[in-house]
Image 1 (cartoon, each protein chain N blue to C red):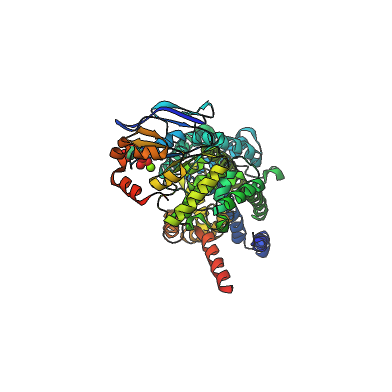
Image 2 (cartoon, helix red, strand yellow; image 1 turned 120 degrees about the vertical axis):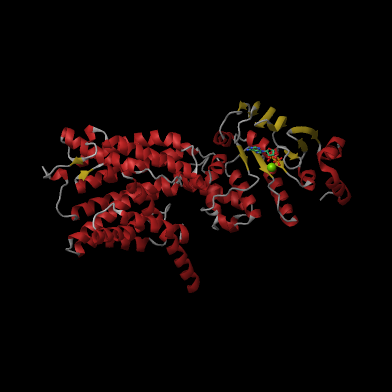
Length: 246
Length: 319
Ligand SMILES: Nc1ncnc2c1ncn2[C@@H]1O[C@H](COP(=O)(O)OP(=O)(O)O)[C@@H](O)[C@H]1O
Ligand SMILES: [Mg+2]
């Protein structure tokens, strides 16, 4: 297993945002993490990435216990992430943002620049390389966060609602990008609200509800699981079934 | 950078300045501008590039100033010989102040640095060895040329210019290296920086150590020229505030911002002092306060930013 999370609990006072969640991620797969707002998906991601220390549980990444490791140690080990609310470096250009990621494994500016250029072309941001990051809109920022994360040359990429707020056309572009990332051999865990995205991208879906994993398996099967339907999907599900899958 | 010819011209003008006038007030003004540019450029490393707004840099300035004079009064060293000692002391203090305060965010960090600096001032004001409230004097008459005690401000002008050029050269190198990118990322946001593998606390500390060392050097240069210090003139809060204002006025986090800020502020300050008499009076506070309000209200990026937007607009018009 590339990543194994066992019995993760994240408590804020008496409230458990994550309440005993498990997750196994095998090398090379795309896992879709779904669940209603407030289910604890982002908090779980923060635990996985070292951004929050879980109250209980253990996390192993590439065979190492990283439960208490810092975010920068996670990055060095090969885990990268995007944030639900993008945090780009506003004073820097798009290319410079990506270079920050590239400097993790390349000490020299020229080498970092080469990696950044490659990643910018790969993510379709090359035209915007010298644009200040602050002038990007939400879709651009989300793409930049992915590019920056890729520049750290990760083995596992955690994407937190990287497609939220995009237009249908932008969603299609983003889906294509995620597929290309996978083709590079990078394992992906993606939090997503749009069922169509999960159904078309993920090989496995994991459903969160009130901090717990209530279902896991093939996306089709999970979506049809009665527990999932009652707990979360409700009328949105019906719309998906009627409308079919993109 | 397309502006190298302009930069070169600027430095030629600065180098020529003391030769263009016989007026000692104006010659002295040049040296004071450069000294302010050194300390603000040093502050800029942590306050500008890394975005950690320290308002307690008087500690490091004072470390240099006091090291230079206490080694003279106790051991008879020429004041400039105390500069490296001051730099080491400043770096040790930086490690002590930085390690706990870097975990604080924004205003809390700034307030903690003020508290540390005030603590240092009060300690020194009660410390016999350091002259307590009275302060310390340098050599009353130069024993040899090594005392660097000159009547004319001109030698100081060139000494300070040399130090400034070295500091800005280092800063330029830093800005283009991994460290420059990492500091900019830290300024942009700790959380995102860490997710990309930036060891945030370590790089803040590197920036602070470098900053403290050069701020301390500025303190030593100050006493070499002025020959006298007391707790207010070496450790007062105005010293720290002035570094922040000079850098912010010119443009913090830019290579030449602090120098530009010094060129604007120091003449303004010296003329108001000459007119109203004495420094550190209420007038200084009023001038500083007014500048803070103006920067905050109209140009958070300082004059460098103003200049950039003007050149961009001119380029657009030309196109
Ligand atoms: N720092 C925090 N302090 C207290 N409660 C929090 C904190 N972070 C998240 N929560 C709560 O935890 C729950 C899960 O949030 P989150 O992980 O963002 O859910 P999701 O990403 O699935 O929408 C929410 O009820 C949220 O209000
Ligand atoms: Mg979320």
